[in-house]
Structures are given as C-alpha cells and as structure tokens.
Length: 471
Image 1 (cartoon, rainbow, N blue to C red):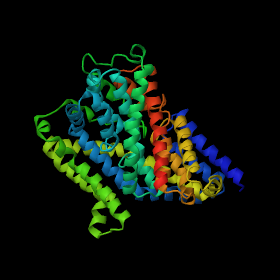
Image 2 (cartoon, rainbow, N blue to C red; image 1 turned 180 degrees about the vertical axis):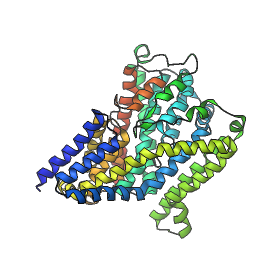
Image 3 (cartoon, rainbow, N blue to C red; image 1 turned 45 degrees about the vertical axis):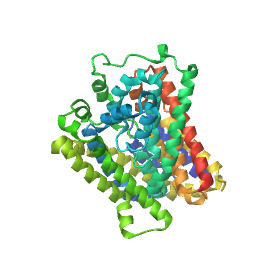
Image 4 (cartoon, rainbow, N blue to C red; image 1 turned 90 degrees about the horizontal axis):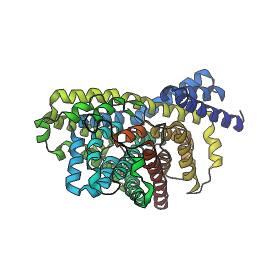
C-alpha cells in the first residue's frame, strides 16, 4: 500500500474515533478500539493480524503500567477516605498564609497529590479554598480557581504517579523514575510561572468580578459541594467520580483529627523518594540490588500502598480502608482500559507502517520535532476535550518513530503532555466542575481554566525546550 493511502487511512481512523467520542458520546475505550480495527483492516493487515496486534499492544502496555496505575489509584482513594486532603489545605493556609495559598496549593496538587483523582481533589478542597478566597486579596476567586485548574491538569500528564504521565511514559518506553524527575523539573516552574502570569493578567483588568463570578450553589447552606459531587466526573478518563468522597469530606471523626497529618502522607512521600532514588542511582551507574529493588516503581508504590493502609487503619478503621480500596478498584478500571487501548493504537500504527512514513517528515533537529509533538497533542485535545486521552493518543501515534528522532523519549513524553494541556474548554467535565465549585460564570471559567491552562501548556513547552539543551 502506498504511503499516501496509509496516511489517509490513519487520519480517517483518528478522526472517526474523535467523532464517535464527541458527536455520538461513545466511550473513548470503544472508540479507540474501533479506530484501531479500521486502521489495521484498511492498511492490509488482515483480520487475524489486526486483532493480534491490538491485543498484543494492549498487553504490552499493561505489563508496563498496570500495577503502577492500580497501586497509585488505591493509595489515593484510601488517602481520600481519611480526610487528609482537606486537612492539608487547612495546614497550608495556616503555614504560608492566604496570599501565598494559590502557589502552595498548586505545588502540592501538581506533585505529591497526583494519586488523587482530580474531580475528587476539587470537591474536597474547593469549599475551603472558596471560603478563603477573599483573604487572598484582590481577585482571590480568580487566582485560586486558576491555580487549581493549572495544577490539576499539569500534574496529571507530566508528574508521575499522575495517570496520564504514567501512560505517556509506558507508551514511549521512558523509565518511570526518569519521567518523575524530569516531570518535576518541568512541573514546578510551569505551575509557579503560569500562576504568576495569570495573577498579573487579573491585576491588569482581565478579571471582572461583576461578570465573572457568581454565587456557589449551596454556598449559603453548606451543601454545595455535596450536591456538585454527585454530578462530578473525572475529565481525564471520562469515568464517574468517587462515590465515597462525601463520607471523607463531611464526617471527620475524632480519631481522624488525632492522626498527625504528616503521618498520613509519609507512605506516599516515601514511594516518591524511593522511585526518584532508584532513577538517580541508575543514571549514576550505581545499581546495587537492594536499591534497584526498592527503587523499582512497582515495589516503591507497593510499599507506599501497604504503609498507607496501615496508617489509615488508625485514622478511619478497617471499614474505612475497605471503602477506600473498593472505590479505588472501581475508579481504576477505565483508566487501565484507556491506557491499554492507547497501547493498542500505538501497536497498530507501528505495524501498519505509519512510523516509517512519519519519520521522514521529522527532522533530526532538536527543536522542530518537539513543537510538532506539542501541536499534535494540542489539536487532539481541542477536538476531544480530555487531557489524558489526547496525550495518550498523540503518544500512540508517535511511539513508533520515537527512537528515530534523535531526542530523548522523556522529552517527547513531556512535549506530548504539554500539548495535551492546551485549551481546556466546554467539552471538558473538569471545566464545568471548576466553574461550579469556585463560583464562576462560564465567562469566568473560560478565563481561569481555558486561558490559564493554555498558558501553562505554552510555558511547559518552553521548559521542555530548555531541558532539551541539557539532555
């Protein structure tokens, strides 16, 4: 088959998947599988080879990321059950003061809290953040809403153990420890710079309280968060929100309050330190057996999960832990399926021969390919409306040619993740959740979410370009 025919059929497969998701509301997992089947059959792989390629691609990516996603989601779900997130917000407020809260909250959400689903994180923290917005200073609502939008979305696709970052690393063959370290180097300056840029815009008249703010549903009765949570969905994987969150948010037992906050987060932080330590040791060539064992991301997250269970027992009892685990299993299912079909698409693209064709369009230049990767992911996100899905799809298309670009695969993963952040808009469930929870009009949400996260997308690409100079 000619190169032109392969390119046309690939474009049709991707556009068909987008159309099924956006126009006909087909689940992304089903839509991507349909697209992969069409691509395999239309490029002459045949029925048997197409199915074998799809299933093998699914299995290969599950080998890479399956346990990581499961352990991370379980850990986050149990932490949610303990009420640790709302307590952390209160602690940050007391420690750093209201004026610095947008920055401290953004850093916490985008790094250490990426095991928590974004919708659950917002529902838990938004009521408190909303109450203290007036204390932040001028345009407090705009600043805290922007900080949460930027931090949540950036962390998901750029910071391990965020589900998008894990999927991108798995698809592109990037060691997870390396993805975490370089993701951290991109995430921190991106979040701080983006929040600062948006704060500057707001101070120059970009925010109009009379037209950009509105009363939060249930704000006067204190029931708004509970009402909104029932409608909340995880934008990144198009799956339902954590049904047990209200118990953790609204029912704080004396036992929970007595459990030191730092102790609740020690297992999670330990996991992250172990993963980073293993990656650093590997890069330095020090590969002692015991370091490689505990620094392996699967083992490190397993240690963190066991530690979280033990600590949570003292906070919420065994029944609370069981509720968290049950919720985590429920939430992790579609994440794993979505990640797996991303692997199926990547395998089909590679087998169909598109990788060799695309390789000819990319220069060995160390700049242009990253911009193109960013652009592909950005276009997919504008069409589909899901940060995780667009990043995974872009990575699936580019994985076959990653070794030929002369660029470290971690930069390709970060560029794809950065592009997937561009223009979060009305097709995103997170857009509407942020709009409701933070008392914004649609016009206000377009400024804080759409513009804010797009600024972060561009800043993140700049950070990736800077990293490209050194690696």
